[in-house]
Image (cartoon, rainbow, N blue to C red):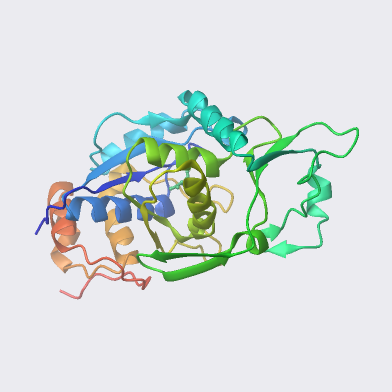
Length: 301
Ligand code: GLU
């Protein structure tokens, strides 16, 4: 049963670094099913902000694959590559508030930091009080505070982090001149009126930083839910780097069934022979969110 809610707007935001794979399909299904089962909207945003990591043709390939798998998005696809002015405006606002600063440290100097957080070295704050003599600005960092940041994740429960200790002052504009994911995603989620962010748990540690930026920029905070990511036999998250195989549109139904199984849905055996329309009809009507188990099995017939 589709429950109508006042407003629910979700999104799927792939980076065109390669074709979609089983891991991206799980994230797409989770956000799609959350949105559609609540009568909400579902948007697609292309996060093409990082040309050095992008693969020619991946943008079109991703959109064609989503279509071939039966995803229907609302409105036009938003391209981050066309939104530099919006990110620049957000950086100016942060500068006005004096919560960002230019950092002149090299990658090596930061990697040598003896302070470690959740995702590696924490920036030691060298340029916090101003650039050392003879240094130019390489990247822009936002100041973090040494206090608890708490949010309730729809699937992972209560998450508590300390921004200064766990991540340190983080980059909003990179040394190579490109916008950092953390800044762009916050600006776009706000501009697109996203109310619910559903994505893979590999991005869980980004969320406290994003909430920090939302608060500074005066944006509403969406609700967050992070689903278990798909790993390979070595326990690594599926990605282009770990050799994930591209989705095959001719195998859309079985690959969707695998994704639904990963999301803990109990699948009736007859879905094996379903076409895409009936599969989506079933999945939306029967979506049982929040099941963390990663088992994949069709019920015995
Ligand atoms: N573009 C990011 C990725 O492909 C996802 C960003 C997000 O969902 O916030 O990993």
